[in-house]
Amino acid sequence: MKRKFLVVIPARMGSKGIKGKNFLELDGKPVITYSVEHALEFTERCDILISTDNSDFLDTLKGTLQSKFKANEVETVDEMQFIGEALILHRRPTRLAEDETSIMSVLSEIIKTLESLGRRYIGVLLMQPTVPFRSRSDQERILHFLESEAGENSSYVTFKKVTDCHPARMYSRIGTEDFENAKIFPNHQQSRRQDLPELFLRDG
Image 1 (tube, rainbow, N blue to C red):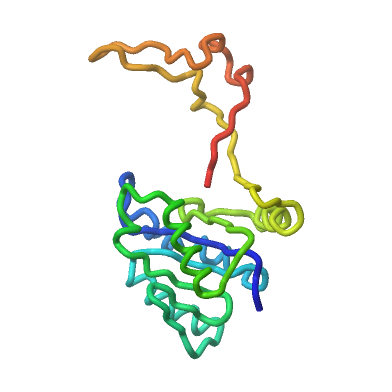
Image 2 (image 1 turned 45 degrees about the vertical axis):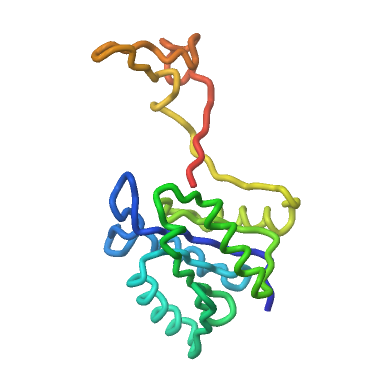
């Protein structure tokens, strides 16, 4: 069965901030596992692809998914492993797992490879492992948008409201120990939090 949408979970081993953040344990299981579990709820409507350079994790996940979906055979094409109809494991090569590698370059190569294998999609749903908690209603809302409202160049991004870390509270360094207000919102430097202009931050 051909599905219109591809869910991609990108998780490289390296990280500039928190080392190995995608695979650190959170309440007894790796952070990435939450996104995998969320994605698996939509295997009837989407193909699911997990892309990582962590071979140990992929080997473990492969066994788990084969057992869960009773898939006896795994088809391997280059860096892609296909489990059943909807599950794809992408063993990301080193050149796509560098600090400088953009997520867009990873997605572009994934899409090109899948298209060369006859798999074409009209939409991609990106699930970042570093956002492990999602509501079912949020996921349904996004899928509904993709299936019934999205145009060729549409994009649906989730945001969270900026509260205490508002740009009006930011400062620039002007010396070793001297700072000045960044003047991003010069008329709100002394405003109460509830009087600050509403801003939102993309949350992945």
